Image (cartoon, rainbow, N blue to C red; front, side):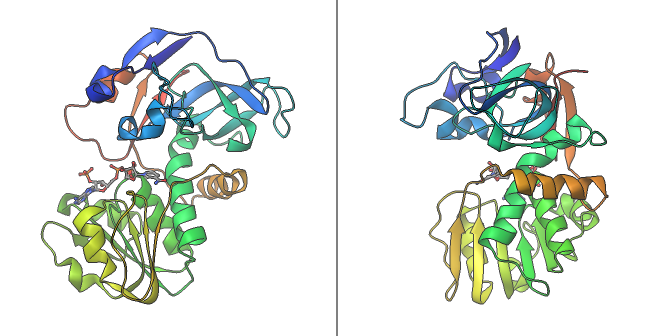
Length: 305
Ligand SMILES: NC(=O)c1ccc[n+]([C@@H]2O[C@H](COP(=O)([O-])OP(=O)(O)OC[C@H]3O[C@@H](n4cnc5c(N)ncnc54)[C@H](OP(=O)(O)O)[C@@H]3O)[C@@H](O)[C@H]2O)c1
């Protein structure tokens, strides 16, 4: 099969190559999926899990990519809940990856059925940002209707999902990001926007919940905006930032079949729009992941036409 591989972490996306690789086999509880569309988070090659297995052993050459939508072609021993020929979407385990390829082996529990009226490209784009937003807002942030949420990077892949889901849940949403992204964030439903290079972030508080994906100084300053009992949820890695009278939660998403179902239902009925910046073929994927200018939204690889 055709696959994108990386062997050198220091080379980043410039080190990606399109090569021939053996097709994967289904282990216990796996399915093999013929990939129709696949996604990749732009900084995935900096994550330790991209380069090692769970015991820390080097697993290069690596086929990156966690996000996928496709059709099940084989079941591993004991696999239940999915069938050969079924349309599915979801996320491969981050220590396994492998979705930037024509076939990938994935644990069945990490996938959900994909309704026939949702395009593979849309499904591949919504899995990672949708699950991250859902888990950050509802599992970790315990968002309630009537609360206020500050969403950093509100025009990006994750931030646009956070903005839409928080609005639907009845929250008041203040988006942040670069000044050039103001209209995009407002179009996704943010009621206010703070341009981080021009506006005073400190004027945005107090809020009940901050959803951070930038980290560093922005996370620290955001902690000071959280009202008593509120939460700083961050996906940018461990942070020292703490609200004076609240919680900080740093998490890494996990795939979740029921939540994928909730997300795809919202896509079907028009409540949730995905933020796709570019669609490329597998043959053009290396160039697509090395753009000459930063592309807003997700780059999706349409593996099968
Ligand atoms: N822990 C987890 O489970 C998890 C899950 C998913 C994603 N993530 C991480 O979350 C981060 C965001 O992912 P994404 O896919 O949403 O990326 P993305 O689509 O690039 O979105 C990030 C947004 O934030 C903006 N931004 C970033 N830094 C900024 C700054 N200093 N000032 C103003 N705006 C800034 C970006 O603007 P520009 O495009 O102009 O830079 C972009 O609009 C990544 O680091 C990713 O690895 C973590």
